[in-house]
Length: 261
Image (cartoon, rainbow, N blue to C red; front, top):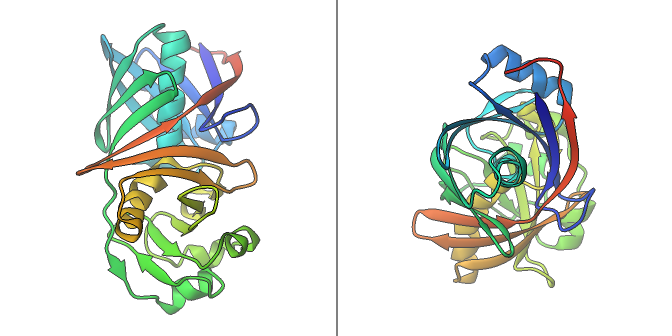
C-alpha cells in the first residue's frame, strides 16, 4: 500500500510541517499504527479510512502515541485524498476523537473547520515561568494546551526550550506567542509529552490561539505564522465555537510499504 509524505502549512517544499498519510481499507490495530508512527518519526502520521462518499474515519499518531486532535496531519490527509486516494473530492468529513472535522478544498489551499480550543486566564506559576525562562507575561489554560504570551518576536525566536521543564507545565503542549509586525501574531509550540520537542507548524495550537488573540486584538480574522526552524503560515478565522484554519500543502514522497492495511 502507499505511504504519502507531504509538507502541510507550506508555501514551498521543505517548509511547514511534514506528515505521513496512510489511506487504509480498515483502521489498523492501535499497536501497529503506533509502530508505523515511530518508524516514520514525523511529528504526526495519519491513518484514514473511507466510509462513504466524502466521509472518512481519521486517527493521528505521534511517535509517543495517539492524540485527540492534529491540524497539520488533517490538512495533509485532505490533500492526499483530493490529489491521490479519492481524486477530486472537494469537501471531506472526518470522524475523529474530536468529533466531526470538515475540510474544504479552495483556491488558496485547504480550509479546516475545527472546534474552538478552550482557554481561560490562569496565574503565572513557578513551573511555567521556569519553563519559559521567565518570558511568560500572561497565560491561558483550560485542559488542552497551555498558551503563554511573551514580550517580543525577538525573545520568542531566541528562546531555547528545556523539554523536562516543559513537561511540568499543565496540558499536552506549551504554546508561546507574541505580536508581530508582519503578522497578527507568531508562535512556537512544544509537545515533549508526546515526543515532539518542537512542532514545526501546529494546527491544533491555533484553535487555542484564535480565542486568545481575539480577546487581545478585538478581531476574529488573523494572519499567523509559526516561527519554528521550518516555519509556516496559517490563515485563522474564529466564528463562534469554530475555528477555520487555511493552509497550503506540498507533496514530497509517494512510497510503498510492504503490506496491505
